[in-house]
Length: 416
Image 1 (spheres, rainbow, N blue to C red):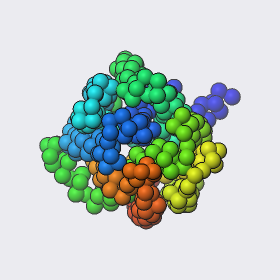
Image 2: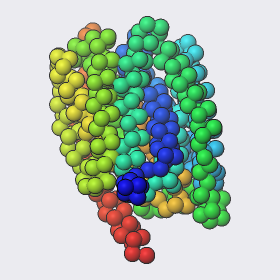
Image 3: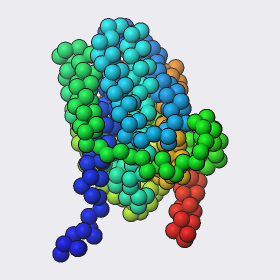
Image 4: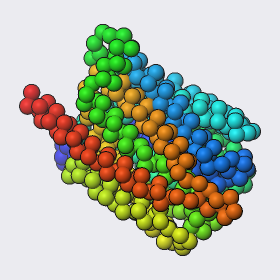
């Protein structure tokens, strides 16, 4: 009986702890980014900013994160990943505190740059740790749990953040994130073991050569292009989600928390299941299913007019399940692309690519979408939907070719 139990156990107790700590890290980082979307309607009113200016607040984080990722890439495989994670997470907390005390639009913009410099690298280091500690056969499950941070931010973070913002001002959610992150950072410093096995695998080359070799390697470059396309959809639609719901769909500001809560609960429940399916029926297959669902829902969502709250909640739930399927399956698939000695550099460049392309997408979205000064409605949101659908389709084509390469690579490794 005990032997049978051991065989069925997929993760050790320490691996469960690692998954939990990385999930909570992702929760704070994702919440810091996502909280801007529901705060959009408040910020545009309180700070008197236009849609393009608000798009810049979102994109400046992405650009600074992208620049930091590129600068870090050459060094990412030269240090213990725990130390690297602690350094950048500490900087992220400091940046979030600066957001909390920013009194004006220019200072908020500057605080977002600092937060992006540190926060944008955390995901890449986390994914490198996952790739080091978990086999490809179970990475779908791991990504399913880690990506639950996205849902957790909707279930707990966003409703609480919106409530704090409406009660105490838009600075309050940033104080909440900084406080929770500080506690988490202490736990990580005390309990997380060093992750330094990769230090024995690296060949002797300087940081610049390591970065150049990673960027110019053909199969890695294809993965970076796929990431560019994957980032476009979220960065285009999400920043204006709350403003579109309030001004176009007729949802009251005090009802937004319910939409995020219900959507988050459903995403939370579906995340682990999607991860298991990714491992069992194939990561690319799950990605295709998620893409088809997402395309249909984006086409419907971007053409909505005044919509009942219950109907919008149902549409949001289906849309986010599709998006979550794409996120989990593509993340798990991309971890199989780099060689062990290049994981840190690959993940850093990949995260940088995601952030920079997302920043550009956010700016372009700000140009496409215009707020009518009389009705306050967002115009050309349907055009934005068509652009997102196009990027999803192209991303699927790129993932198809990447999946073929990964399968050949895994087949070769099994036969060695």
